[in-house]
Image 1 (cartoon, rainbow, N blue to C red):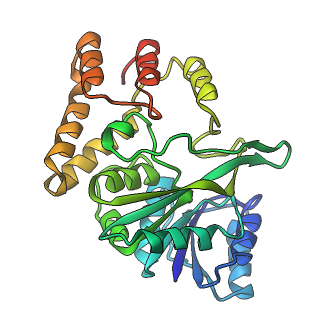
Image 2 (image 1 turned 30 degrees about the vertical axis):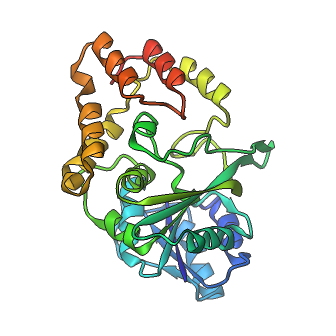
Length: 302
């Protein structure tokens, strides 16, 4: 059994396509648990209609709204009790074999405790078709390779088990995004398996919460220059990382505590000392030390 948790907000233009892609999954032992954050565009009417079409679609109407995307996805976890969990955005389209492929990878991983499986996605919109064959450009396994991402691996590309859900349900003071927290937990206290294939269309449009994805390292570099007025580390992600460390520090290994303490202390240093520490500790951006160094030269730190 897999629980698909879908958080919605004003998604009436797109959500029907996503729900239909669940209905067409080759693996059929799933529930789609839906919760809306206060839509005003008819999204809830569409969700209600699907609960009448198929009992696997379950709408939780508990009066809670205004959570925002990060807390909304975390909030949804309380309604899940299946052995496996997937998050879903409201505007993507899953390939028919997505759940089956990821569940097989999860079963084959034989996780000892908390574990997550990530897949990839194709960037797509109806006007252009496939924009890029890969959304996730790099698969991090360690803290030093993910702290400068200002994100996690795409949350809608993840399948995680019940022990991981339990860790994610522990309340933190601040969240930047749910996928950022999931990756932090995974690289420090869990196991990660990557399925290096696209299993869904990641729809690109003007209403994307996290903005349009770059699609390649070259485009990432171009965006780095175009957005050079922005900081290297977003305040929201820095504060969320600090909140994660504060909550989980007693559960972390000494090496991970050391890396997090170094990262959290970086803003207090001048440029040269900060650069020296980043080089010494082998921090990377998308797996590249040099890409991170370029970003350090182009932008203010925080």
